[in-house]
Length: 312
Length: 184
Image (tube, rainbow over all chains, first blue to last red; front, side):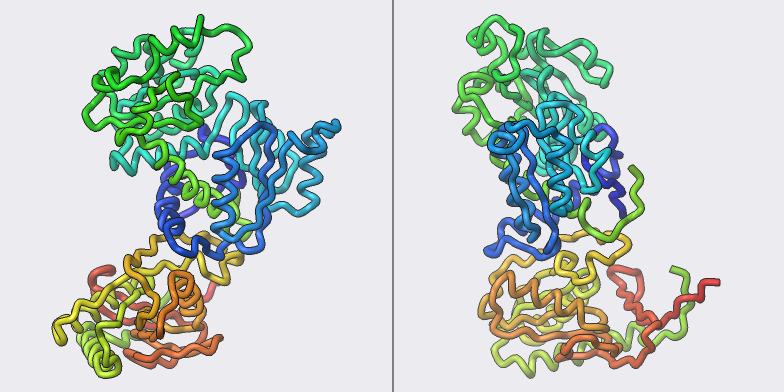
């Protein structure tokens, strides 16, 4: 077995085998978080830096806990209270962190490609924790892990992704991943949110939620990213809610055993009704729980072992 | 790995006999079998553990709780390994605290696997005692660790390899001594 990558920059260039390796490894890590002593010594002495140029709670804490449960040392660096506001460039910031002997840097940045850029000059392992509207690989991996846990398979499932696809790195990583594993994907949103070019990725587009929900196995909701709305993509929140909000009544059109997913944070009453978010059909908190195991698997696979033959 | 088989030191009958004898020793030495739990080290220690648990059940009518331990995350040579080991699941669904734990592995060599296994067990609880059972003790220990129950002492040289094969995993029961071929 081999996971021959130095970095995790996105899902797009991973093979099916790589993805399955991460999911299977995560399976073994799940149990560690249920122990009384939630810690194993495998990454003792490794230093990991959480580098955030964008607000992040879930992903940051999830990576932090994953690192700590593997006994690595992790420290958080946030641009909101750092030298970035004093004018330091991204490159200089990273070079400084590298000089402190970071073995891995987990990067979240509002610019697509920032983690890739860092990997071109930095010798540490780089993990993309979300870059602009490009990719969020660990979110897609934990979503796939959760789907597999609930449905025992991914191939052939009808997956509906609803919401602000245009601005969503979660959607993009999920499309890459779920296509590789053989799911049928339908994107649902107002036209401004789903550019036609996305069809090139092998997905279908539907502007009518009620129609798309027929026969759905997995319903993946996305948050309306208010902070990214530079233009008016839809007339009003109320109209969006009327047409695209997942309500109990709409949900009945999906398959009997359909599950509801959401990468969080959720806007209750906007993209999803509060009672559905709290219902047994929702696996939103399962996703969060699985996220720690999946990130442990990613850290283990990247940082484990000697200098291996790296293919990327 | 390219290697040649030098000797077949145990066959199915010899393995079964050794396991029977060890099961009897376990019953003799553990007056309070109700407090005993078995933990097999993956992969072959798990199979040996199942066989021991079955024999104790047949002889004493007691169901011994049984778990499986993966020690990959506790290895001390992890950073030197050329290839990564697939992490397998640890499945111990009962508390270890105050239990007499019988740890089982196929071969005792340097003792480092057992060190890792004991660290892992202690992270999972605080056993009253830990006993060790191995099918083969081949010598060359690097740590102060010895087994309480040994199927067979097998003097070997350091460069030799010992393979334990079990029917349920490998298709047949046997213990082989092999030697890696010189790389020319």
